[in-house]
Image 1 (cartoon, rainbow, N blue to C red):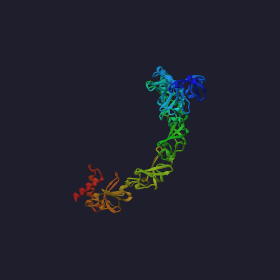
Image 2: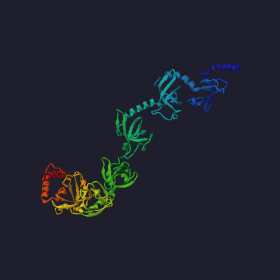
Image 3: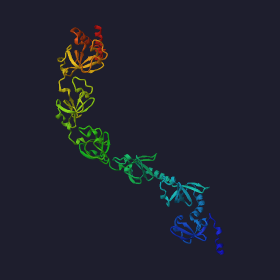
Image 4: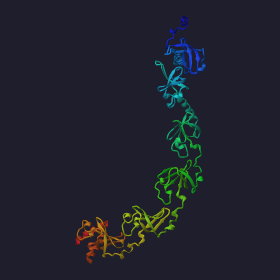
Length: 554
């Protein structure tokens, strides 16, 4: 024993030093070595780059970490011995900026540990162009790296793989920019997808494939056509050498479906398609990939008033339509659904000639007239001015309500504008044509008060003609409020003091009902005299002036 201890003195094996070891056994998981102690040491095979380069009996240097662990076995490391020996060599031969080859050993906080002869730190941001989410994929892989920082005091080295990739891409981009031309057909790999387009890697040169240049058809997002990592064929549309930007097109590698569009979809032809979009004014129908036509709401029905396309169509509907117009330059096709059916308005002039007597129900009332249904989908309109010869109608609902059945006369037909004009007053003769046979200046009339305003009262006379009694013509004494003297429904007797055929007005005077011929003649003369006074601008002014002069005469 003394002899053996003399040959291999344990006191010379100091932890923290590099010692010689003999390989006793090699397995898949470990290398067993003899360093001259009572027990052998085990080194994980992962510490050897290529375990096949070593053999049993070979002498290697190892780093002694501990003489004995809890089980009495020494702890040694082949990797640390190599690093200890290599550190000085690395520092001397590989200054900052040098390119080195290394193998990724494992993960650490913030990045990876790489063996380049010694352990170096590879930050996560320097692994690739974009920081990877999964670092496990790099463990065990070998790459070239650039030394970016050496800290001699801490014996720490920081390396970067990203800088090498960027330099390589920069060189490739410069070569590609020098060779690429507008019109070139290229193959590239989808690098990134955004809402507005796709970035394609053309062997180091990035090109933008805008969403509008991806397909002749309608797409909502670039991801509908391509995915990251997919190889695509594109054409170079535009090059900006200064900014190193390239605009690409994918749809341009295929024929434009709008070529010869007028031959495939002649005007008047029937087509089938799918509704792909709805807007308030119409529906877009896809006839084929890249070709859409618009059915305007006005082209959906001959008779129904359609406010929104969604009232009769929904996205995905398969419909038939007729081609009614083509604008090739702006890539527009006008379609119509109603053109597939017979136009009922083509028979309107035959069915409803001018002068025809019709009967129908009031379907709708507006402030300017009444719509009367003549047949399903065909309406005629009675304008507010054609409701009565004699009454001043401010709103049609003063005379009619929805659902009323009315008689009318057809007074005009315009199939092109899909309009039929009706008149209710035309059912009778205009009483103003022979007004003198009904009323004469100075004649006594009797009627019912039907309306009271601040300036006068309206009296209903025969043949539905209204006469107006100005406030000054109600009584001899001054009247401040007409309602103090008259009420709706009162029967009154008055004299006619004015007939204006042009204005369709009959002026009445209650206070003159008992005048003798002389007084009445004076009243009428005073009125006629005032009629031509240019300063009097309305009937109320005229009657006010008459009242003043009468007060002076009496």
